[in-house]
Length: 286
Picture 1: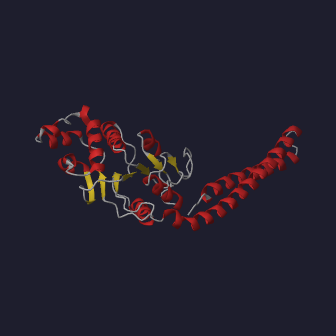
Picture 2 (picture 1 turned 90 degrees about the vertical axis):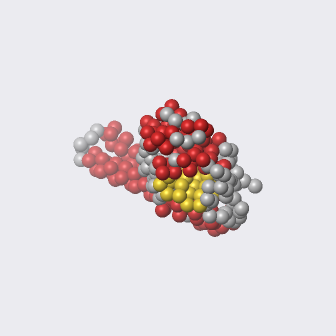
């Protein structure tokens, strides 16, 4: 549902508290505790707070009406939006059931097939274990040995994940990097959805992930980082800085619509209900 109510309710609570505080202040003023100038200021602040509260209530009512309209339009907006599209999902950290269900619902509502593959990446990465796994491999894999090559390794893995096929790096490093895996690695993906379920990484892991995100984006297919409205800490800034589009409210109908639009080829950007989002929805692609 197109649900801003929790934002506006919080805003309304702030205004109510402000009004109460000012009323108490006015009462104290009547007792001679404050000066006349302070009383006039308190009265003005009270009137301003009440006006702001009225505006917030009107905004909430308007949003409720908009929510109803969007909910009614949602099936038509989503119908066959991703028909015949193959989408891959990549979790940074363990698979999260809530996020997985929200993404699956997006694909289902938009007429896509189930995700072609889902992998969860073990983080933090162990650079020594990665080097040990690559040491005995052919030269095209050994080129990624060493901490200085972690970003390049991540980039190559990102490209492999989207392109599918033989995926020699994923096969060589499956034990070191893959927590859970479903689907097939052969089929190329028309788009990829990324969800982070761990805290921000540092050091070698951050370097590796920087490369991984770059590799996903470099393929040219839509790459979208998603999270729920309650995600803490948010991964939006990280995804944005690495070149991914973002949806910060995939648990809402608006977020699922935004995700479907982006995977269908809408203009990339940051979408959702949180501070920093460009807007709620991208323009729907033709």
